[in-house]
Length: 245
Image (tube, rainbow, N blue to C red; front, top):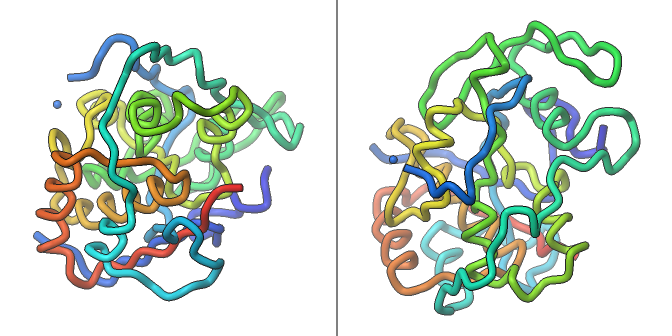
């Protein structure tokens, strides 16, 4: 397991703190299969602006949104297979998907041969649903692969796209959530989809913005407007991030 994934309250390079918070079809080419093992809430999340130093000043959600580079989206050439998924970076037998599931379990699953996970319990923060069957959960890229492609990843090499798709050094770029919510989200950005649980929406906004800043991804005008509207009700949401190497 990577150093980052030490448990549901694990510390990471990418942390978003939420002290208060206000208050669905997917494209076929970005479909995500249900995972055979499952999800739970980690500590609140987030990230830093391009070039910001590690451990820099906390940013409000509105301040963090303002730091996202502006750009038009272009999905030309996108294929989900352009991103290599579920690598076992440390060679411990547990791939990225399993590492997330182990980290986010409210009740730890048993780990068998080849990191087969049985038992356990998870809480999906998108909809506040507690699940005891791993097959009912997916691992969600908070900023979907297609969205990342649209906003800068199309220019990356294969190695950087693989690191993005398996980013275990950021606490909130990958989350284990119910398959239902993950598939209702698909590749939508916040102008078209927010978590159904009102209690999750400010945290989700911080997770989204932190991921964009971490990977220096752009936002178009409509996405930015939706984020700014969300931020109006998330005045106490704090974002920290570190730029990915």
